[in-house]
Length: 220
Image (cartoon, rainbow, N blue to C red; front, side, top):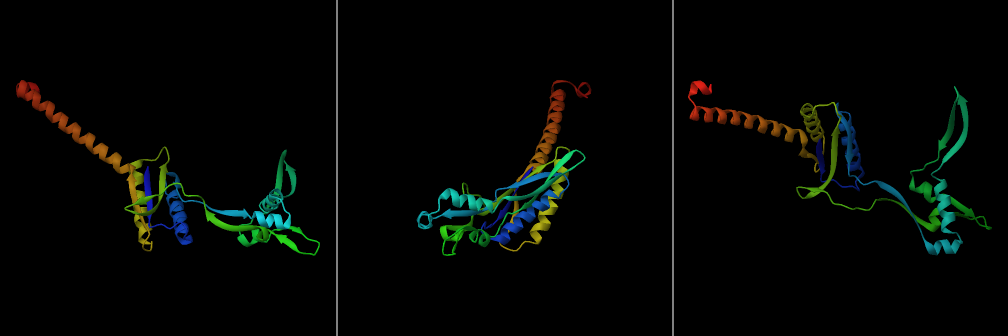
């Protein structure tokens, strides 16, 4: 239906990322919008094991990886049955804090020292690898695509999208700006106007030809 662009966008700026999520969520609340999609790269947690540290503490990569994976697993509690249905109960043990992962214990030594993930690995949040560059008017951009529902009318939806874009831009602080660089409804409107003008022109041309080769009474 339409493509929007958040201009002057910095993917490493958490405030910019919050605004991008807010923009998408706002679009998805508009009646007639089915879904949206953006090309914002995810901010993932990376654990990079250090070979020399693994060797120093005599820890295998498999053991270290298993211990780290356990920090993100669900902890089963039990299950119960009701109306011939079985329900499993689990507690989420997922941690989003870098320090929590760094402090995950791997094993203890005979001297009472606890070896943690931070002792054998670098832990940090990073953006996934960048495979493409998006720009509009020569400035960094994050594109957002809008898809409509099957039953909604593109021309009616355009008015709601335009109003939302106007209000959203009014609350944005420079240098961020939302621009519409692919306007599907506008294209449809142009095609309808072209079809209408071509129809009128064709009708007049036919009438002119009839008047030229026949008398006007016969033509009419």
